[in-house]
Image (tube, rainbow, N blue to C red; front, side, top):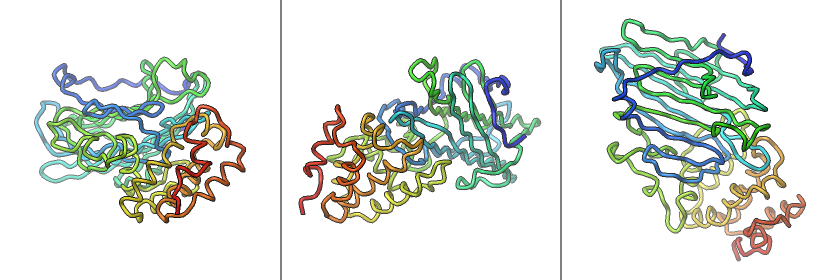
Length: 354
């Protein structure tokens, strides 16, 4: 069945494809784990408190048969999206847009979405598939994602890995696996596995676009996180800014009432120096758990993103933060402890002066 809602008692054990020891030794991995933190393919670690949909990676790999011979090329785009619980962001699902192109000739296209959360070890999950399109903007079909080219050893595996408590999507022949450990709102810190998204790729894979969260190792000859740092912003602020500027479609299950897209448009139109000031003075809102828990009680981040939009709009238009300050005061969240930026913001010192 292409569309599925699953609990831990309904899913079957999934067997991950076993590559040779040589393959495993040369496999790169990127992880976006709670709360969320990125561990890039280059093993750089950065905080990534981003409430919107993002392109985690764009990989191009050699398509290989069971003998290791190159028989084509694969392009794999992996998107992630986050939800929120008790003021903390967590990865709640992923999208995959997949192209498999044989040489000579023959193109296969797939679009896949996996959404999953858990409570006290019981999963609530849904998967969607569409064959014949790799459009990453509409991963909402009901097609059976089974694909198997047994003569060449190229096939898709997906399902539930009961041993490692994760949903997985593996493209054998492309050398790529995407997996998601669901965040458990009941167990929380007692979860045995750290919840979040993992992407693994064989060593001859490389990153295709600069605007991706999972930057590659030096051998891939692409920029690492320092390459997108915008002085005087921190690595984290620069990474968040790069995502807002990337123009990714915001079609996650909880679209934040369009606030992600609206905030992105403001930053994209903003003058460069004001854009830096906006991020420097506004992105604290994404990482202060006590404040978020008070201000935005939705599972998405609609209210939080609306507040952030007000803040960056003030900086980009060089206007006082009147609307944002009023919104915080009215919410009753103006005296949250352990949030040093909050009092400064309400006093106007983190807002334009003219």
